[in-house]
Image (tube, rainbow, N blue to C red):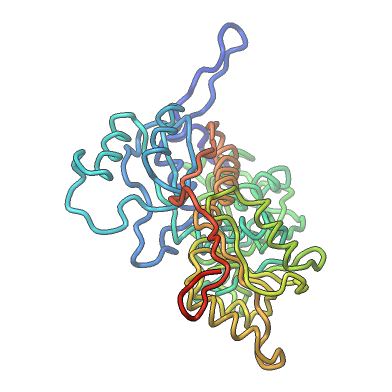
Length: 425
């Protein structure tokens, strides 16, 4: 308890905006501050063991004023970021996924690294850690399609939950809830900033060497306080405590942590399952998917009867063919994902054509890999912007407008039928 030293502006650089009497200094974060915010949203420990996430190049002490989000770290998005004067390019896909022994400018990937460094632009990757985050890549895809009541398609079995209880002067309770929520506390599916509070009185006596913001050394003080309780994933504990300490008005804030013995339903994991606001025909759902995702040469294709009624939909941003049967088992009527292989689709379609009582019908909707992950860009950019704003910094965060799907053209076959003798009609 007692007063805390002033922590405002720690690690931040002032940026003077405007001129004349109306000029003001806005705080500019360092790259390290931005990375900390990204790691709060997409913890690198969530990434698959084969993945390559995090900072690829860039000086953590450099200041960051402009950030661009893109799916792919390719020449076009690097050109775009440098053309916009960006200090950081955040991509979903890794640049250096396979092991490398060097990044010479004579090779395509090395050339991009050199261009980024000489252009003063860092590169950061959030890949499978963003796939399983809550909210993450599949949440953004699900919400773009119009799904609600989301749950993981493949829940993370390792996710554990804690509860934090903190006592704060009543006038500072809302700011503290905001800070802990930004660090990952109080988030459940479509809801965030979930907290419970009650009021009471706190008492303390500052001792020698204390610097209380309320009361005086040696005197007993009594303060109206609010008890705030929030639930958080165990792996967000350190970030939430850091946010608590940075925001709390007391020099020594009082708080308790509890490991929850009861199982809390996992919010993190691969893919999502949700419900449409109203049932619709499969044909209409396919059209909706095509309408909400950016256009690509491959477009959207599907299996199943166009008139089939769809209520529950499973999605997985990126290549999710391996979860097709999980989608069926989750009660989905349709599954939206990318990079579907022939045999997966064929076997799923055969199963769906069988006895419904034995095999639940499941329509498959295949979209471009890039398009399935594109909705996450705006969601991630918005989350980062909000986190940095809560921390007292201002950054220009943008989403790339480029289509980097590698397929650039397609043509429908004109052949309608092949006769037994090989002739075509």
